[in-house]
Image: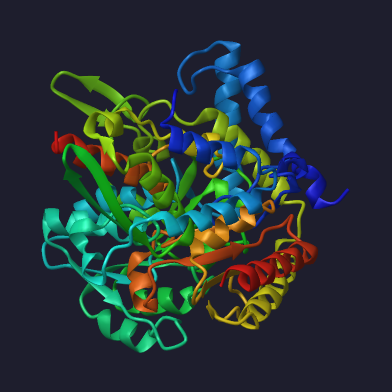
Length: 398
Length: 136
């Protein structure tokens, strides 16, 4: 059995052609085991969690909390707050930690390659409590300018930094960034949405203070993600969203809160999604992620080179070791949207636009790019079909 | 819905094409149908906001009929503008407001009409109707 056989969606046709799905940085496809686990939960165990004593409630609670346990094992993390995804995780840090621990004038460091989800929450907080935002620029080769980063650290309280760029695939030197930040007394929040599908992260070993990620980038369901938090930072967080499940007692004069992660998980959680994510992690644990990453990076390097050889094309990113298997590019006469629709006519799914990273687009001097991103079920033959089809399109339409 | 005869002709033309790429090629040919804008008219004022491509539309009312001119940096978006031009130009305010955007689904040139970042056509269509409504 190959990895591809586990993904039923890969059997479908798009516009009469076999689907070639190359939009994995947006979301990955789901293996049958995830679909079955979620179906099975709704068919056999659906109930609310953490409260009732009946059999179904017990099964639902076990299924949902199994996800947290799988995540703790997968990431070697002590505290795992389950959220709706990376965006909510970052917003949670802004509201539950930063609002309680930062004051006007404190600096938060961001970079020019952040996704909007790691920019806008900080802009909102800056408007609200007057923190200062500092954006670290990029070098000519689009890597982070570490000298500028070091200079920006003076007086900084938090560094909120993308682990791996969703546009360029460039993996930032996060180990160095964490050491430099801590040496300057700043905590570190990593946006690891694009990193977790490609590398096994040991959160304790990494020593970051916060790490945000989403299930759907790593073969899990949409609508669920998590925030990993170091114990001392966890203890500095104040409740953000109020409601059921996060309290110990509520009286009309006030409330007391849960002491564990539930304190930050008000309301009925995403139970089926938790069950699905646990199944995805079990499935992923059978795969050698590192060797798969090397295989996919080789495909991305080959693809980048082939695209560069097509007249009128410009490729962004360097595809160095550790970078994700993402290739962003533009053509000087075929509009990204036109290219994407023409490729779709041949069953090939790619992404176009600003990729929720407009400051990076401004840095690149473009309005948007085309982006192909490979994952576990992709292969060299698909990359070859992409190149052949794009060459035909460029010849015909440029 | 009953479409204006000129638009129905375009729908019929598309319905005869089986190959998806050929359909898009024909869509791009419709880019020629627009009354193009001058360089100065590629302005923020005329910009269709929330479109992936840079798309600009200018609408005028003459003798109770609506006339649009448009341009985009994507050939397909300009092709959609060309089809809209056929649907809109010379129609009365009431006729333009009666139009619904789903003719592009019938033509199989788009796969969704939900307003979103990936669907500049819907944004453009809604903007045209809003502007025309104000011309009433």
